[in-house]
Amino acid sequence: MPNADILRPHRTPLVAAGILLGAGLGGFVDGIVLHQILQWHNMLSGQLPPDTLVRAKVNMYWDGLFHAAVWVLTAIGLAMLWAATGRADVPHSGRTLAGGLLLGWGMFNVVEGLIDHALLGLHHVYEYAPNHLPADLGFLAFGLALLLAGGALVRAGRV
Image 1 (spheres, rainbow, N blue to C red):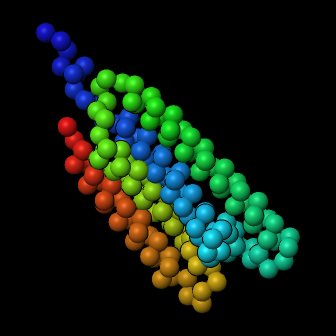
Image 2 (image 1 turned 30 degrees about the vertical axis):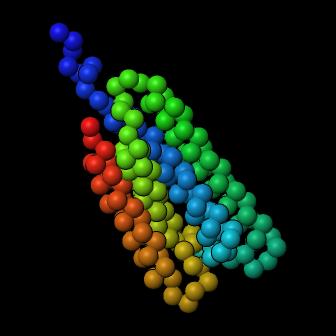
């Protein structure tokens, strides 16, 4: 009789890959949409407003480092996903992967919102608003909603 543990599906590699991919892709959404398209903030705009060319270049440099970091997260997540798909004990579940992606994006938002916005004050979601709190709280609430939805999808993807 075969070992029962060998036959039992392991979803952890798929969830872990999804979390890293979700954090990286969520970081790209933040950087591309909020930093570049809407121009609501830069990585250091709460501490170093981009009101001169030098300050704008410093902020752009740190935005670039941020994008490099989320690229690395995404690349590692992709490598983990590739490794997971080659394993017979890892079920191929779109719900589980999508749940991991949402968990990762939600974790990104909550960690970034608490550390960069609230604790360190590096920037706020909408740096140039007279009151930062509503947008910062909305960012955290969106992150929490992503965490709840991700957790539900991971649970729904159980085999």
